[in-house]
Length: 169
Image 1: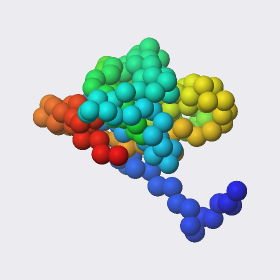
Image 2 (image 1 turned 180 degrees about the vertical axis):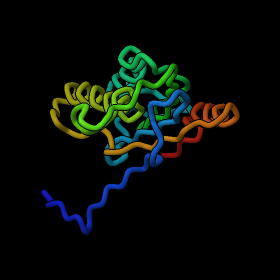
Image 3 (image 1 turned 90 degrees about the vertical axis):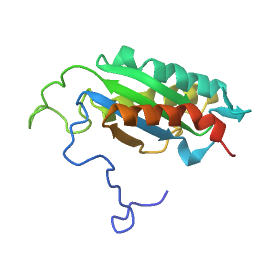
Image 4 (image 1 turned 30 degrees about the vertical axis):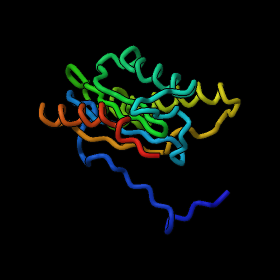
């Protein structure tokens, strides 16, 4: 295993500095499989055909609203090596934690907390299926875009819907 070298290994957050990711609104999410491995299925004739691992991911994605009361799902598509989806947060964001309220880290109810939970439960499910406890399924980070208006939401929905027809691999 390679040792951590702060001069070479830099992890910079891609989150918008100062933005409260518990705020109501839409968020476009893209999560990629570890090493972009195509384990979630295949695209044939412009249609995604999920593998059993892909079925497990879809089930865990659809379960997000059961575990995050303020979250609703909009359009999403699972591809062979990534997932695109829209999460809508409703209602008022709870008061932010204050200094000393507990351990530092991901803020409950935030988009990062929702994605962290989703990645964790889907990874455990896939690793049980593969018999590979502790193996990585997802890349460490994910891409997120704050959806600012109805036109952007419509554009992203079209992008998601068309994704399998554009698959070239």
